[in-house]
Image 1 (cartoon, one colour):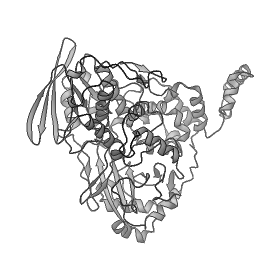
Image 2 (spheres, one colour; image 1 turned 120 degrees about the horizontal axis):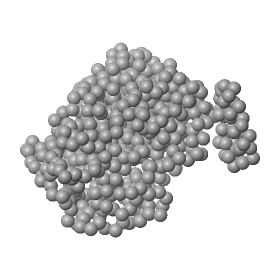
Image 3 (cartoon, helix red, strand yellow; image 1 turned 60 degrees about the vertical axis):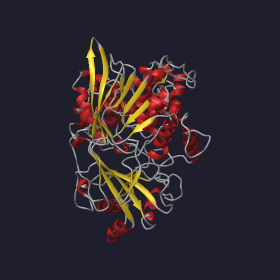
Image 4 (cartoon, one colour; image 1 turned 90 degrees about the vertical axis):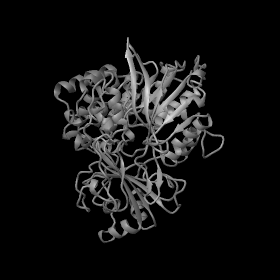
Length: 591
């Protein structure tokens, strides 16, 4: 496996790997990473689809990329996916997956046209005082000292950030800024999460820093992530003969580890309650999704709070990873991620409006018609004075094919589920769907005497508790996540958000799909490059633009410097006078 850039081989079809017709592939899980790997096996490794098998304990595919209407409960979306134009692997694959909406076009074509015609941007990113615009006005509001803290993090070597928390790096100069409000609510970072992940995010998306205040850098699918992304991939795989084995738990995987070789030998399955074993040869390839941010997630209801299950359960993905990790240090350290759910849990909530009564309050904030079919909020709106730190979003409606045209689906989450609400005086984690809706209605400005009535009769609200929602961001060190293909691995790979790849950032669709491409290309020696992570980190233009954006447009020459620093800057400016360097700095308003 090797990385490539440019388009020389981006669309080339690789030669068929030798002997692939006589090999088989088995997948633990059917999330985005596993489905992507299956698609890469079919398209690039050219494995016969009938040789590909997926095991999942759930009755449908998708993993965390869900979207479903449960009988007697309602619509549920545990989360949503924000995409970037430089998700190189994602768009590489989706150009080959046929749309299930429009005949003769790809998922990428459909997505591209939609976001060109209806570009995303927010008209109100932050509110306060019960739905009033907080007038952050696109400003980061960060001091020079805070900007320097961000810069130091950006250039700190990864090794120095291992097992460090964000609070070890930043102080109130950052934490009290608009920047931090935008950042932590968009990405769901706790202050105590990993400083290393924070740094990787800054480097990965440095080209989008200026779009953080109004979210114009983001792109969204037409429908929910399950119907827009998962279903086309499942159909593609089924059309090629891949086999899905649902209601099948993988309880354990055993390896033969000796003489520098690691071979997956046996898979223990529990299918419809019956124990089964799958013995593997070196021509049987196993793809393991180790860990999940929706592990132990529970669904409440309009009149039912969620159950909180903080300990990994037998047959779950973290439990399986623990059993695997006991067999070799190269298989990672799962407890670094699932050992303290109090530092990574949050709740995702789906509010289904049932009539027109709530819609005017939404429109008053987002300045758009929620039922227009176009962009609505343009990303999340954060109630910055909410005790739960509520953020909510409305994507293009309808979000489900089955959704009535006069109803609107709102997704919201609370980053602080243990905190007391401002209207509902109890922790979010203990609230029913109706009570959570009441708190949200309070923060979007519904008169207090109407809140309970609207939450009861004008909405159906379904909460989900996710104990490991931000587990990806727990402080970690090198080796805590296994390599996609560990050294010496013969017939297996790790997939998803808890496997290690260079430079990319977890909690993205791209990361899952990148692990899939790396796994397939490595194990099957596919002679085609994996697109490298977008290199804006190394583009001086993006670095200059981000530096000035973070200072709200103020040139670096206006920084409060001491006498010696001012003299040093003066000498530099004199030396570059009349050069292309001076022109570049002026173009980006650095001077």
